[in-house]
Length: 476
Figure 1 (cartoon, rainbow, N blue to C red):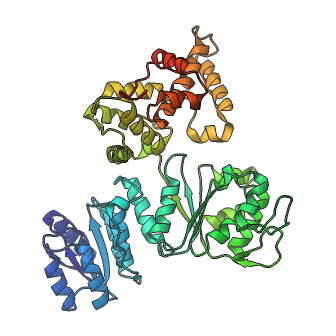
Figure 2 (figure 1 turned 90 degrees about the horizontal axis):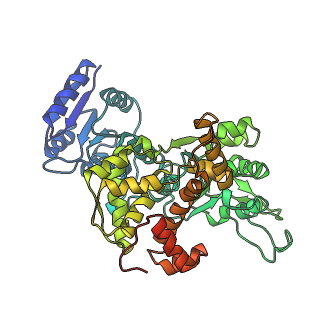
C-alpha cells in the first residue's frame, strides 16, 4: 500500500517533479505552497510523511518541525532548502527532521530517503539556537553539503569519528563543529597534536602522571583524557602517534578506562574521541607502524574533508569570509574583481584553505588598492612555493622537500643541464614567500620583520626591492 505524502514548497516546478516521482512509486501526494495549509493537514491527522521547504511565504518550515513532533511525534519530516549551510542542516536535525536535503537535490537520493523515512523510526532532539556569525565552516558546494549532513547525523551521538584530509583543509574546524553542535557542547573541547609532542611524553600528556612517576615529575599532572572529561578529546595527526601509545589508546576505546603513568587505580574515561590525520593510515598499517585494530576503533564514523581544488565553487565565499576577518583585525577591506576570482578558482591550492586564508590576509596587508585585479593575483601565485604539498613537507622536512623539488627539476629536463642561475632561482622561491609571510605577520612593520628574520633593517629593505615585494603605505 502506498503512503500519503504531504509536500510543501512554494516552487511549483519542484512540487510537480515530486508529485510525478512519488506517484510513480504508488504514493498519494498532496501538495501546497504554504506552511499554513501543511499545518492544517497535519492537525487533521493527514499524511504519513512530510516533505517541506524551509523558506515559504507565510512561515519558516523549520519552525513547523517542533510543533509537528509535539502533536504527531510519529510523523517523519524531510527538509529541503536552498539555504544550504551547516546551520540549516544542524537546525533541521536538532528540531527533529528525519533528513535534510540541500537544493538542488538528486531525485534518486530523495526517493531513497523517502523509502527509509517510511520504514524507519525518527529521533527527537532538543532545539538548538545558533547564529550565522558563529558558523565554523564556510561553503555550499556539494562536497561541503555532505560534511554538513554528516555533522548533523553524528552530533547527537558519542561515536568515534576519524577525519581525514590534506593539511590545511580544516579538519579541526570539523571536529569543533561536532563538539559545539553536539550533546557534549557544555563540556570542554581538548585538542592534542601528536606530531607536536615528543614521543617519550605522549603517554604522560594523554593519560597524566603521578608524582615521582619519572625524573622531574614533582607533582601529579592531569592528562588530556582527564581534562576532556564530559566533553570531546580531539587527537590531531593520529598517524604520528607512537606504536606503544597506540596500544594504551586502544585499551581506553575498548575498556573505557585507563591508568595514569605511575598510577595503579583505573580511571574511567568520559569523553568523545575524534581523531584526524592527513596521512594514509592504510599504508601505515601495511608498514606496521599503525595498529589495524585501533584504526577500526577510531574509524567508526569517517568524514573526509575535500581539498580546496575539489570545492572551488566555495572560493568566493571563503574570500569574503577571510576578508571580513582581516577587517576585524584592523587590516583594510579588499574586494577581488571577477578576473582575479576566476584565477583563484583555477589555481591548484596545494596548501588548501589555509593557503587561501593567508593569501587574502596578505592582499589586505600589502596592497594599497581597494579592488584587487588579476595582475596582483598572478604575482602572488607566481611567488607561491611550488616545492611540495604541505602535507609532504611536514612528513619529510623542508630540506628533503627542496631536494625532491630540485631532483624533479632535473628529471623534467631529462637529465640535461638547466640554464644558469638555478642557485639564485631556488633561493628566490624560498626567500620571497618567507619575507612576505613575515611582513604579513608583523602587519608590514619592517623593523619587527627584520628582527624576526634576523636581518639588518637595510638588508631587509634591499631584499624587498630586489624581490619586488609590495609594502603597505604608512608602515615602516
